[in-house]
Image (tube, rainbow, N blue to C red; front, side, top):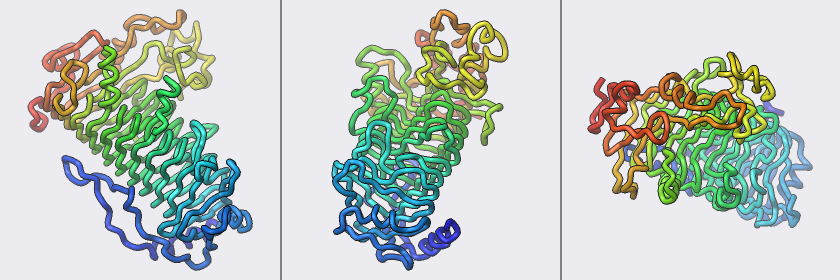
Length: 497
């Protein structure tokens, strides 16, 4: 069936209408594709061999799916398709099924059905559909609800649902979709057993998600934004327009590895544009960041919290040669930052490590230790566990980026915006921790190969190093003992060397 499906899709590619992309503008030229309201007009008629699904027949889509063999292609005719009155009305694909939407084909949950496409069939294709009105619960998704592997979702609009628009399995491709105004996430890449690898997120517009404001509903849940990734090994995230989301733009949380994030436009996201947390090995290059983190930054400032809120935030995340990837560093190169609340923060919580009560990913250990129970006294006080029980912010290279900042454009007249930072807290917890005191702050600042160099700055940038009390001028930042931003320009000109 898989070979027949591949041949069928090749025929579809030949038959597609050619559509010129619509570009989102940036200050530095054209940006990623604007997919919302600009989907191609493909599948105007049912391809040969496809099963036609009729909108006037309630639940016709699932009935025909159930009656057809694996690898069947279905063509949804124009109109509103429904899945019955049961909250658990859903489509259960078979392996290799293909679902093609004619222009105007809408799969509508009507605020009744929880999920659109579910269970674990592999290599399912969804192309050209609008999917809306489903009411998935917290942390669950509407399309590929059970994180089946090998799915391809493209040229589709998934909007106005609760929960996440998409879940993800291994090898999933998400291309040229409009993921708009969903209650929690646009994409939630999580699979039981942590087996996700090799996913592609390309040329999507991901806008206005987290309409249910989950961080207010469940304070500290860490469960909001445009995209959330959990324990994903290998992801290419390129040429997407990620904007106006009520939370982070891209949040990689817990043992992610080998991410390539390039050519994206992140703008007007309320929290961090990119939040890479207790994860490994990242290439972040040739992206544009505009007006991100303004809402979160102002909230911190209003309550007098001096933590350096960042547009790119690395929290216990670094390069690790022992974890295989395309790089063994975190490379932040060739990006443009313009009028965000702040720049880049490198942070390491001295109290957060494997088996610590301060580790909010409580069931997890680092990729370098087999089980969290190993990280206890007396073994954790010496090598190798003293190092390997920590997720470390290390081997970070920040080079050839452009940082533009005008406080008037950001709406910040104080000293809590326009900052770069590399720092930790004073370790105190738990009482058996071997990381108490300033040891972690010393390591992240001076001993873990974290470097800014060859960048271009314009505007009144400020710097923090070691801890939140140590604010530095440009001159202090560049001088010993910090020696950061060698060969950088602070006049808006090209780097000095």
